[in-house]
Length: 199
Image (tube, rainbow, N blue to C red; front, side, top):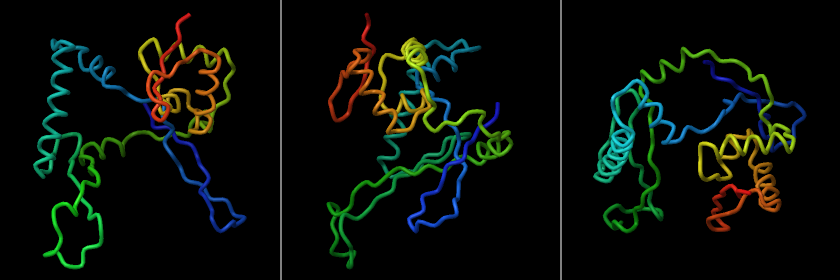
């Protein structure tokens, strides 16, 4: 397997005539927990429930240790740590209180071995242009059937990755599929989650 890339034009706020581009990995889809469980079961005597349980325990322990302010290192994957930020500018640390500090993010540094493996991967230019690939109605229907054969719900991000579409095109396509009665939103308008309308 190789890592495929495509070129994207850099934004130029100065309005210069010379175009500049950067390379970006072409994302061929999202690997879900369900898929990981299926793959981890192959060639193993461990059951589906046991694999799911181990992954849930790992997630719980990661949350627990990070919540204690610890740095968590998982061999072959990487290191996680919590980052904080001040809600307002601090000029005197002695006057700042705990309520003035809040969670910012979780940073991740990939394991050296993982990075080494990625450096050895072959890198090839994609054979297609991922900038919202044009699709016929038949191709869209086929893609929907393929996706929902494995998954129960679809988000806008899922559609972007699985259908290889940009965010704006994905939004338009979802609106169209809902208006055509092919999909229905089973969540909120602000954070929609779609399910297939079965005929």
